[in-house]
Length: 62
Image (tube, helix red, strand yellow):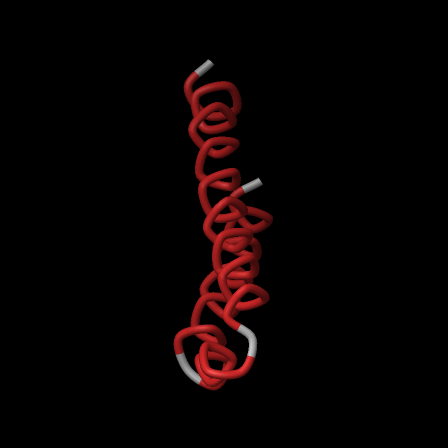
């Protein structure tokens, strides 16, 4: 489970890094598309954290 979580975190970091770097040029061409993608990446990041908050106690503390 820890490895699966690490893969999701690395994927989320790569996704966010893309929009902070090369994907930021979309701000000038298509602002709505960029805003939606950044919002979805933030929701994904929080979803992974929320799942981990519940999985950690269940698998490691019980």
